[in-house]
Amino acid sequence: MKKISSIAIAFLFIAISTHAQIKREADSSQMTQSNIQKKKNGKMMKELNLSKEQRSQMKELRQSMKQQKETISNDNNLTDAEKQTKLQKLKKAQREKMKSILTPEQLEKLKEEKKN
Image (cartoon, rainbow, N blue to C red; front, side):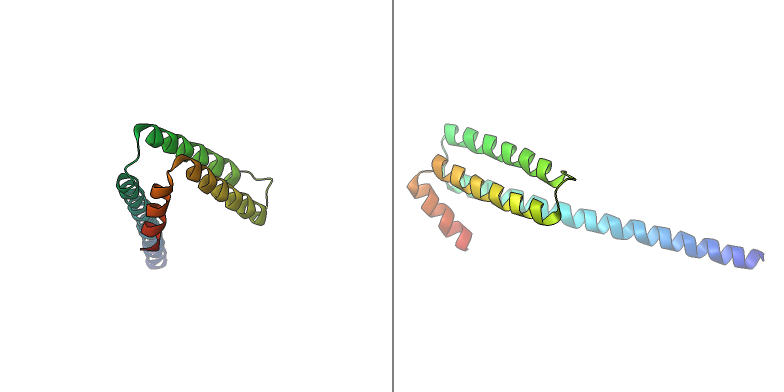
């Protein structure tokens, strides 16, 4: 009986440690992707040579969009399809607002960077 209990405890320990390791790997992978995206966005913004006012407007836009995105994502009254639709509309609104902030030359540069 002790042998069976010992084996059961050993399996339980292995299962828990494996699950924890998988979770940590997934978290670090997401963080890496997030960091890569932030670096790409930062590099792109530097290459656009934004004025102080434009940087301020872009920062406000990002913060506003982030807050709205979280609100939509956390709204339990919406179905996944409704959330997806609202997020797509939000992204479109962000692009339109960005067009009003950037100069035509900066928009062209942005399009070129996105192609690469």
